[in-house]
Length: 195
Image (cartoon, rainbow, N blue to C red):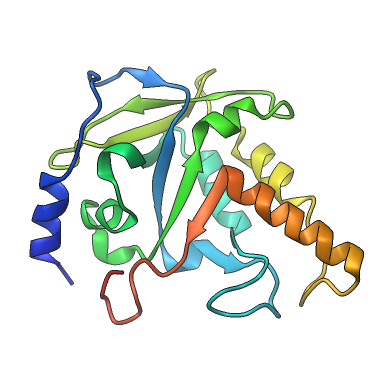
């Protein structure tokens, strides 16, 4: 379901970076469009619409990122401005429902990661905000390392944390997760409308 007015507005409101194709940066916040099957609640028993412990990327999607040798397709937030525009300017916009905000600077400051990442400018007209995230050493084999780093602190409850200690740990882990990757759920509603 195309949104012609929104599409043109998103094109017109872009503020492209002062960069040439192929230039790289090692910081900044980026939007990654996600399909329905890429995202799940952290705990099954949590609220469906506003889960206390948030949403997570499914392991198989992390693995997909890990295997994506050509780079991870993203949009620079300060250029595209909104999650809605990130989806609308995708060539297959109707397939995407959620958006993850990725803080590349925070990821690169993480002392536990053995490799850093860069974002390479790769405009894809009419989207002038498009980048690909690549590992600095030329491989993207470190996404699973980041996934484990972010997922491991959560208590391994299936439904919900039960003890005060588990609850506090899960809340802290959720805030930590969001400082690197924050998932905006249902940017596109089930009926196709965008919020």
